[in-house]
Length: 395
Image (cartoon, rainbow, N blue to C red; front, side):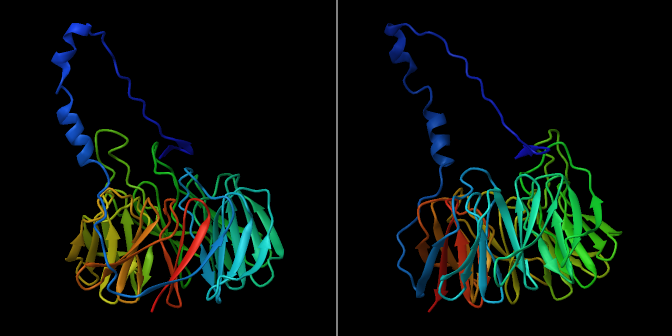
């Protein structure tokens, strides 16, 4: 969390009093309830599981020195059969999606925090406010642009534009070929926000962006003009912490329906062309960072680690799974007939989309996985905080 771009910290000051040695026995048991509370707050233990579906770990690779505790939730981008990944230190790497074989590497001294890909271009954002555009085939540098704030949200590429949502709340569009700035749109930040930002989502001639005040905005791709603005999460509460309602995951387009989730545990379905709300559900909001889309279900994660499947047409609950409580699980992805999340110990969990049962578990190293898994051509890829990529395939 941060105040503007500064991490939010809380200090707990504990007073102590001297106790006479002879009175020590009277202290016994004073903190038993606190010990019990502490145990109840610990991450759920994983029960022994024999996989009932076959999962193959098809390759692993390293993108460099990872994010550690920076909270950037790094994840790779996939385009045209290649996986593009970056760590905080190590430049940008291109790997073959099927084999993990290294194709090229772009060396850089910049601390790269996010990467997007599309239309033959790879664009990396840095913590010091740089955009670096590379040729997707060769890794050759095409252009650079300077932004006034750090970039944690992956740039979005499409319709001859590169559109980036920087950490100061600004959305900026650049020409795909030259990097020339076309327009920008600013949105005022609340005083306290979750660290990060929402990658924008492109539809024909429209840019959808989730904002740190819990709203979702539609902009004209041609000139950045605001078309509509709707609340997703309610920024209500007595304290700034209680009012946090960030939408930090890219809105998801499913047909003509737009879905988004907020830090306030609100998930909303919207008719994209008109901006008309269709339904709202008080689930989701794991940092507002993403939704998995199946044939009939939208899958979201609560901040407490509960995973929910919601009916896409009505928002009604199809199932919930609480077995991963307090394990800091990621936003879900969908691979075949399964919802997939990862956790703070590097475990990846597969759940049946029809009933939420956990049917498989694999480990991708021992470091936390914070970014939403990525699925392309049937292959699921996770990136941990050490910069390691692991790819899995259903057999």
